[in-house]
Image (cartoon, rainbow over all chains, first blue to last red):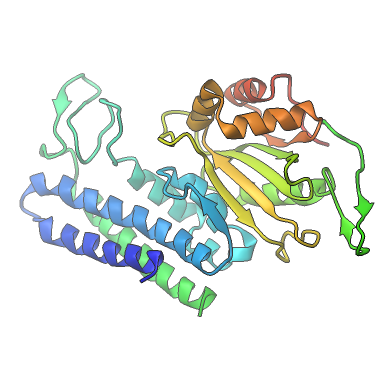
Length: 160
Length: 156
């Protein structure tokens, strides 16, 4: 199996895990589902880069970067059309926004994994009620599934 | 602008071998395309030459917002290499090398004197580096000056 296929398999597993862990009536599960949607989305972008490399369109070094904005620089290049339609500015913004809930070293940024201090200096656990909303998690689910569908369609067109 | 000299020569096969700054206009168009298509925008773009591969094109871009960001744990920036394409035609055998980073990572790279920083500074010392684009922001001016070691000028 190629790296890109292995990544897409893991994406499918991440999305399935997100659906399994999500319980609408239990807000403590929202951060867990959000984490899986964030990881799935990041892997989709990396799977596309792996596909591009496997097809000999480009050679990457250090493409496992967490800075997806740097990868968008490559994926929107004219010689990789129509990938630019998948990663248009609007979707880049949505993905960048989702990536901001990934855990970092900061203790003041909301994330899916570790407690953080809010604007008032109060510690909040990601599982605390209200830290993540149903609307947000639903949006993350929509973004990741829509991105996966669009990506697979365009890759099939680009690399038949 | 550094390095205005024309160094185009004719190779033994009669194929044009082109050196820096032959691709100046193509690079400008390329960077302009990125500026249109990236949600977070291009803050700085440098076109430079490498002594190891003088026939290749080297483009360094700083993208994304200024602020907190992740830094490569192995002190290496994202690098991508392309062969000639219809959108960026290169002389026979030439390659386009792109190095893409973020402001936070660039600051870490300058502080740690990463390989990419050393390569750009060597190109500057050979007068083979030019600013293809620079966002007019104070922070961008500061890290550009730290990287290049002198006041940067934008290519005409």
